[in-house]
Length: 418
Image (tube, rainbow, N blue to C red; front, side):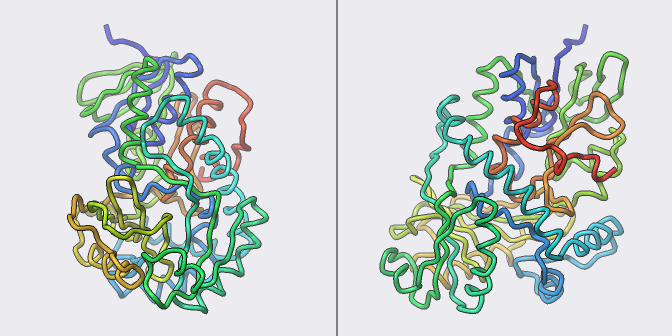
């Protein structure tokens, strides 16, 4: 007889594990399934910053023109590999249509709501589950070498302030005097005191420990191939046999559209695209920035931990291409060298790529799947899955269990794509 579970969570990344932990806390039995390993996707190699400061969505006014300029530069921060892909170009047209002030503001408000709620919850979340993941609250800085770029960025700070995101503009000379890790020629910086950081690979491992400690079960190497709705819930076919549950939570990140086809969610292919990101992890250099940085003109993120150092970012639309693009990795190091005295560490530990799950309105997809009683989604977080994880888990669990949501769920509802 096949064991039945209240909830099957498909995906052992940060969103799936956070959702599982919150469902367990509400008395549900939970089994997490993953085709690979715990945290094997974009949860592993991102820069680990918790950034309400990134509330502004990608579809900013002027982004279309910028993307077109970058399109023929393979190592550009935002790169679309030219190819015949109707789903991609349909997604791009919807994305482009939102590159206006009204839609930017709508997405920014919804992103700020979930980012601020998640960031506020992190200290208690870390303490309650004793998550050993090098969590700290140094804030984060966006640094500039071009005065015109700095001035343009500063003009949108009042919009962030209206969303509850504090900032302070720092003159380049003042910043250099306080942080000798930066090279001369800095025009200035914007400091966001509300941002924080953690080590993402350890965070996911610790979430998995907390899930099993709370009575959850995690099965890795267990690929979900199909699901069927029954009167009393769902029957799921996997590479390890059948699994039965009342409800399924699909939290497979950028792979959600592929799995969604077998679950009758073909609209996910139109709603989401995989945005490929890269990172390089090193042993810690002797001279490091005092806070996490975004090197703005090169769109390179820099994070320092007790025992490591990471350069990351870039956005490449090339489908699920599984090659490590040397040109884009080299661009991270070249970009860092323009700003930092010691741009790389003494030893390279890992070169990584992964796919971010990007919706065309740059908002996560959280809630019941349209037309399904027992199928739920927690995906589409773009580059902010870690930043949004605590609020995502809580919101998903509230919706599944019928509690009053702590956030307005409408902006994140899958119904907007149906």
